[in-house]
Length: 571
Image 1 (cartoon, rainbow, N blue to C red):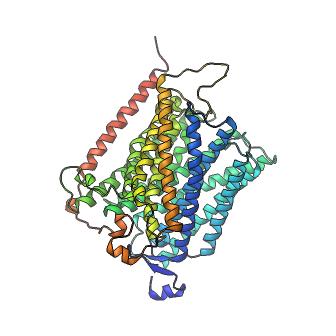
Image 2 (cartoon, helix red, strand yellow):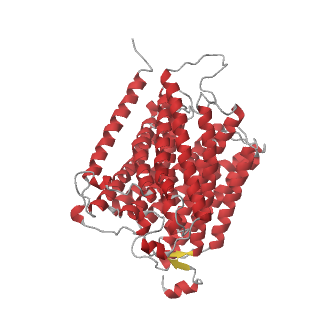
């Protein structure tokens, strides 16, 4: 932006000494408030999580049935909706006006949308914790909550929709005022993808929650099958906003931590477009056992269309680590296939969280998602612990870890504070990622033997029938408790570091940055230079990882077909 344009908006810009970006004050403030509330929601969801883990662990079995379902409702809403979407709004304000050096066109609209989201969240929290909405995250009809619960979700969704519209308006302003040259950066393009999917998602939410609100007051009828169909346009697609935002953060953190390159802008952008066109259709895999939908509809949505979204994820799953590898090789780490990985900054919590997010999401979340999304195999996985095992390695170990990695860079770059408890911050991604991977794997194993999801007591004590599981299930549930406790500790450290840094942390000074004494990630002290050399655009290490991934996928996929074949024994 020109100097006159800067003065015209009241001199509301500052220049970031690390990135050189011109940061608009209102955009920066909106990043801050959305990120802070996201972390508050994460804390509520985290405390709920440890209570659920200690109830799922049969040896402890902490909560009574009513509080188990109440806390399960709170956990799902806080983690899947409030934490994720508040943080995604912060990502949009960062990837839009800040990365494009642009002003925010209507700051009051942004603050009003934030307040509407906050009011909606507080309404939902009130009705859930007072026992007036024990309907779980899905709130399937005919389960009925207090009308205020549905109204709170509507308020939240409308506020988020306005924020997304504000993001699009900021893009228009940046284009008209020519605050950037050429195409928008890839990170911004990914944020645009997330925003478009958000519009699709939130409109589905309005389409089903408005009539459900009237139904809760006895004013109209809602068909349960119609509810399930439209709800999953919100419930599943909201997680696809996460995927687009998460991948955008992967590209961002690759550059900030390693000076990673983008192999091919057109290919990466095309993969984001595939997300827009096909990823929401994968919502159909939640309906594979519903009798109201025909097999043709199920097969088309969960195979031919979904495979296009899978292709997009596989493209990003290659280009991001390959860009990291090439970035390292351009800086001299060229010995063997994996020196680039060995010499990566593993003590930088921004990098370690990002790389763990990439690996766990790909190897565990991606493979299990494609397999249980297959119509035939789904029948042996549906409503077992395999399902939460899967989405904990996607949403939690994938998205949440990526957001955590970004937080360690937002603290110095946006909040302009040093990172408190840097020693704890360095181990936090390993505790959280390792804990989630452990308990999610244990859930998948227990679910393979038929352990049900959501049910308060998997042993069905005092039931009219007896249920017996192999000893492997008891062992797996012990690891659910162990892994969940470790993940809880890692999540608690994240909240502690973020809260103390933001509200009580030491201000980041130019002198400390120049001297290299500031307690911040290494990429903030010295931003890796972006070096490009087409002669070195080779990534043998990443290719090896890709073939390992494919081998694991093939083994897991055909193992599930073998398990399915045992269900109907012949002879």
